[in-house]
Image 1: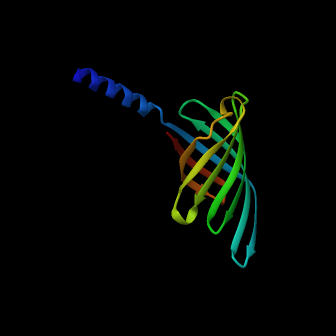
Image 2: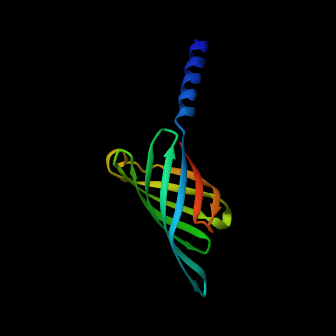
Image 3: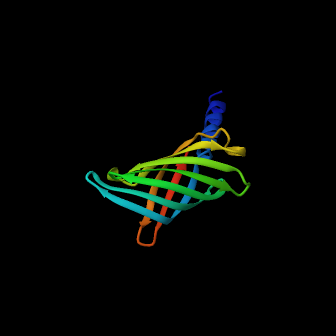
Length: 139
């Protein structure tokens, strides 16, 4: 009985290890505007986005991002290779590092009721050429 329980536990944990999805994300800044205020710089950025997930899903889209007092927040619309649309939002406090949260907000087809939140980590950022690369892990 103990051997069967151990075997079942091992199988369950092996499937949970495969449940994690890793996504590679590239942002290309296409338009940026900023204004100096008495409270600091306020910036608004428009960016194209391309993603590729370890589960085979790929999409592309556009994001509108604001940065105020070091806090980045934005909303994106993605279209995947099946034609389904996914809406998402993200948040990162750059004062605290490269880790942020991306949350799906639903969409069409497979994304209709998807509200999963995932942690992303900015790996490369070169604003001189307008590129940001991040990796995201979803449970």
